[in-house]
Length: 145
Image (cartoon, rainbow, N blue to C red; front, side, top):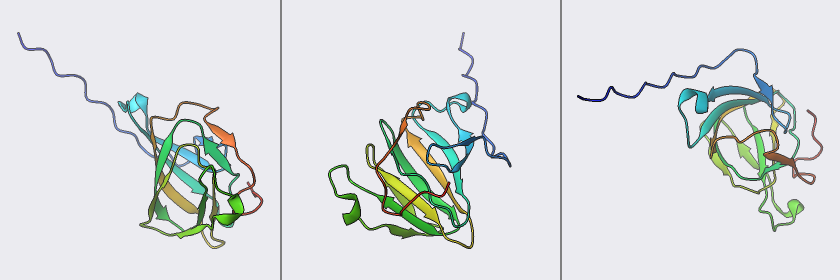
C-alpha cells in the first residue's frame, strides 16, 4: 500500500508589527524558519528606521545573504584580519544583494529620508540569542539605535 505524501509545510507571512529587535538594533519580522518547514535556512525582513545607524556585530556560526527591498543606505563589512578603518562602507539601494560572511563584523545605516528594508536569509537557520556578538566600533560611526 502506498505511503501518504508528507504534509506540506505552511507558508510564512509578514506581520505589520516587528516580531523582535535584533542585537544590532534593527526591527525583525519573521518570514520562514523551522516552524514553516525550513531546515537549512531561515528568512526575515529587516528594517532600520530612516537616519539610523545599527550597532556593529559579528555572527558566530551563520552566513547571511541580504537583498535590499526599499530605501537606501550604507553597509560596512570587515574581514576579521583587516583594520576596521581601512574598509570603506558600500552604498546600497533596492535591487542590491550582498553577503555577510561568518565572523565578519558589520554595520549598516539608513539614509535620512526613508527606512532601509531588506530580506535576510540566514544559513544555517538562526540558532538563537547568542549568535550575534558585539563587535568593535564599525566603519559607520556610533550606533544610534
